[in-house]
Length: 212
Image (cartoon, rainbow, N blue to C red):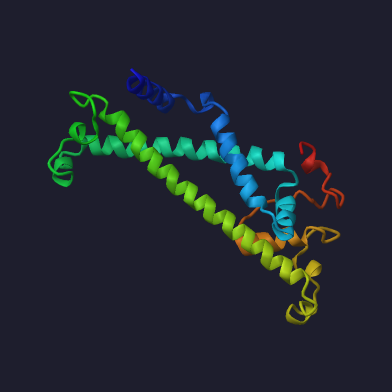
């Protein structure tokens, strides 16, 4: 019964119109919290970079929970496409030890749950790849933060950057207070809009952060 219910729920999710998809759930938020804690880290450099990127821990959770939800949705959608293609492939047995689609994926007497099992298996695998990519992005972000921290403390920085200070070289807003965040962004490929905005003050409480 549990297996059948899972298949029914999965099928319902796959046919829901885009506007009817639920918002991030508890599992999405738990995953987001774990990622935010990892990204924030414990060093002065990573915490400084984290604040420049998100401004607050709650903002990080909201952003990453939404991304987690989107990744799960995309994994299901792509898994469904792959399984439909495999199910329609007349040569499927030739590449799966002579087993039909139902025999290879199904667990019931007649393999009626094969499609649901196929989708869930592939969706998990696709989501796992996304999770690994997310971990790599976090590691890259933290390494960039440490590198920028080192550059900002280097008295010889101007000599190697056309006489510009760290703030002048990386900063883009009126007071260059976003220099550290921009440095991290440039080294990690993590393109984001700094909470410290040209139109806001140097504490990051301008209009773009009214929801922080």
